[in-house]
Image (cartoon, rainbow, N blue to C red; front, side):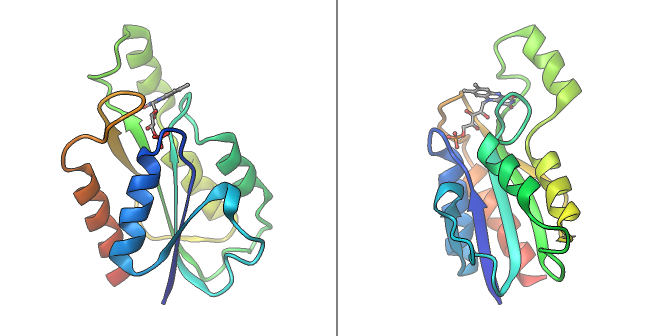
Length: 154
Ligand SMILES: Cc1cc2nc3c(=O)[nH]c(=O)nc-3n(C[C@H](O)[C@H](O)[C@H](O)COP(=O)(O)O)c2cc1C
């Protein structure tokens, strides 16, 4: 079964998560700006992740998802993840309220995957950084690996 993790990352935290997932499931992790036109060929499990930036995925991930033709992911099991800051660590009350209102990147990614015909294999998931530039909070890489492994073995 061919597995692919497509991701974007600004400070390297989402990249770490994506690479740990790919290694754990014997797949490949490819950063969005290096994704070739035929990268999805033969892929049975597709995991897509992005840092949450202003409650959304990065523009590169959003644009790619929007550009996927309808049915492109037909027959592909797919799941979305993001990295994010926990509400408790956000250092402003306004941000805390906005996060609650507008959420994180994984949900819109999952929507994009479903719109392209992907079969959502898990709820959107998020992994926490302690501050904008990281590092990931303790235990998050392990949690990400377990999530990917569960999807790969389902
Ligand atoms: C401009 C900017 C906007 C951000 N917006 C959010 C946000 O809306 N919600 C959130 O949880 N984290 C937000 N963050 C924190 C990022 O999620 C964090 O930088 C990211 O998880 C790090 O991943 P990366 O190292 O892969 O870039 C923001 C960070 C920056 C720099």
